[in-house]
Length: 337
Image (cartoon, rainbow, N blue to C red; front, side):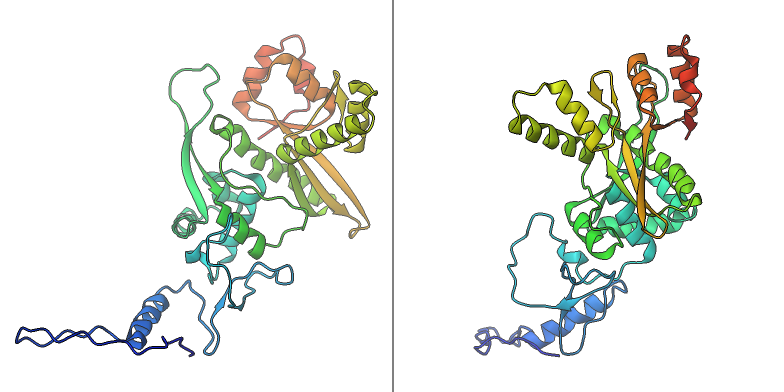
């Protein structure tokens, strides 16, 4: 093992004037041996090569789950979204990598859904993995209140997982993701967390249907990304042809992104699932929307006309049915979460 020793020999401390034996600081070699022994105690850390220290490097040419590259002179200042120091060189288990990629794709996922989809209801294993990923500053685990929707009584608490910026960087490095798959970190709008966690549940149900008809290589685009792309396209069109009417521009942009234009507005789903068909020779997409009791009747009618694949929980379905007594047909195609 190569050790970088200082150019000057360490100076010994001056002998103490007292009759007791002087204390001698450990040499750099001994200190290095102690550090390596402590590091080896953690079975999660990858063993280091005898002649070459190694660490994870996010490189376009290194996209495998455990790819490592030789250490080199780098800027040691912390970078925005950099992989945390304590996570460098980790050998992640398959379930841990799955947690990072699933949470990153949907921004926030409830632990109860991770237990079902990633861990096959092995809750104790999930708790150990989440504790480890949290310790390495790759994820955050929070407990938030469910929606009240004007209802009193008991307030349900939901435990959810989000990625840190470092966790998002590591998910991109270790996960098997399409290049155009966007990842997210941090929590946005805590009041909407319950709705956002239901998007992942709706995705799982829709993904089963897509895979049954032969769809592969599923990618997800959340409304954050869709709205951003739509707004950029509208801005570019107005800048290029300022004399055109806004309604005409919106209709053109809606057609460009294959989105429905209803009630003078572009309808954007909660998520779009893109997939390949016939071994990649053609592609398709399905748009999903999660309906809640907070939806107003007019909003619900627009979503129904948009033709999205709509999902709602049993309690939300009951509340929505009471709101649209005269339009019961709107509930006919809503699938239950």
